[in-house]
Length: 142
Length: 130
Image (cartoon, rainbow over all chains, first blue to last red; front, side, top):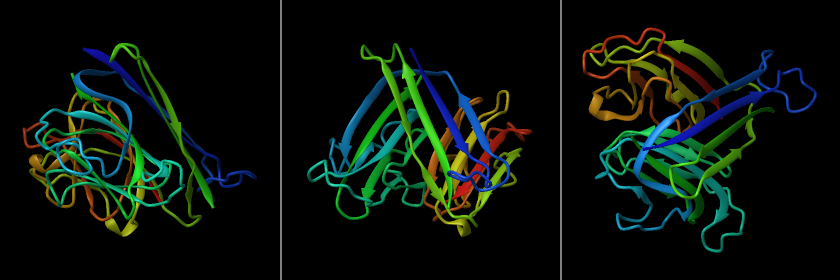
C-alpha cells in the first residue's frame, strides 16, 4: 500500500476586480486535500497520444476488464501527436470503454481532470480530429 | 470575461521508487453571463432515483464534487439511469473530483442500491458553465 495526496484549489477574483475578474461579487478560494491509499497496478505520470494502442484498442487507456477503482489524472497538453510541438485546440472526449451511454468529459487544450473511476468502466479517449498528446496517470485504490 | 483558476497537486513518496510531485494549473475563461452554481445536497439512494445535480441545458461545464459525508459512498451516474451498476464515479467519504463535463448527459448522485439511505448533507458541488 502507498499514499497519494491530491490537493485541488479553485480560485477566482470577485467580479469587481480590475484584473482577471470573477463571475460574482463573492471571490472563490477553495482548497481541498485528501490522503488516498493506493496499490498496484498503477500507471505513473505518462505522456501518451490520444490514439495510442496499449493492447486494448486505440485510445483505450484503461480497459473495461479492469474491475478496480482507479484514481485517474488526465490532462490535454495542447499539442498534436504528429510532432509533439504544434499547438492545437482539438477537443478530446474522455468516456467509458464499456458503456457508450455513460460518462463523457470534454478536455480542451490545457484542461485536466482528476476523479475516482469505478471498476469495469474503463477509460477511452478520442480526439475530435488529429490525435493530440495527453498527460495521464492512474492509481488503483487500495 | 470571468476567470476561474483550478490547480491540482499530486504528491506521493511511496507509490513508486520515483516520488511524485506534480502540480498543474489552468486558466479557464468563463462568460460573464455564465452559471456558477454552488450547493450541498443529500443524495438519495437509487430507490427514489438519486438526485440530479446537472442538466444538459448548461452545456459543457467544469464540475467540482466532494463527498462530505462521514461514511457513505456516493456514486455519480450519467443521465437518468440510476442503477448502481450504471455509475461511473465512486466517491468514498472525503474524496473529491474535478472534471470538464461535456454536457451531453445529465448527472445524478446517489448512495447506491445497498440500502444505505440518504447521505444527509453529503455532497458538495460547484458547477461552472464553460
